[in-house]
Amino acid sequence: METHEKRITQRTGDTGTTSLHGGVRVDKDHITVEVCGNIDELSASLGIVRTEGPSLQLENIILRIQQELISFCAEVVSDSTNILPEHIRQIESEIEHIESELPTLTEFVIPGVNRSSAMLHLARTICRRAERSLTTLCRTDKKSPNLAAYLNRLGSLLFVMARKAAL
Image (cartoon, rainbow, N blue to C red; front, side, top):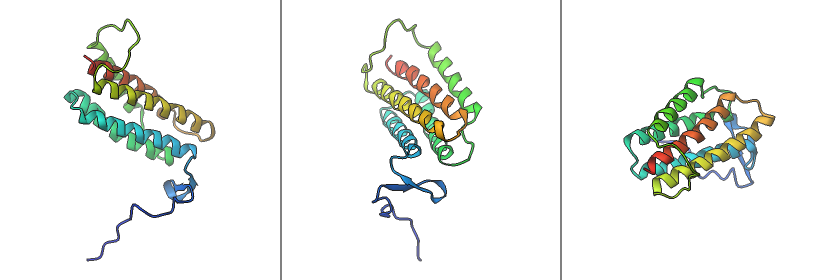
């Protein structure tokens, strides 16, 4: 039986370019690639958090976010609409729920209480970098405002999740 698997090593990127949706070639430092790279790094950092054995509540949220981040990148590189207002409302609801379980914040949070909390803070900073790079992309490419709202809320969710993991 003959298979035609796509090889991971194709050598097409050796000259500093990569393919986007539809086969469009762009430089590897193109802002679209930067946004998707930041989102990929965010997902990977959340994967590390999942290996730390967070509560079932946080683990379920993280896994859902990782799945949504795949859809997020698909929207960034194409004309699809994947991130919807209901995704943003879901995050807002989770922020409110988690925040209601936390003591009132009276001082700046210094990451490092435990590994899970520190990793969630790291994910939050990666999310904020992704948000900044998306802002740069949106100056030249029209993208749905849902993308920026999603990352903005996600940064806040990761902050309250980090606080909860620190308890």
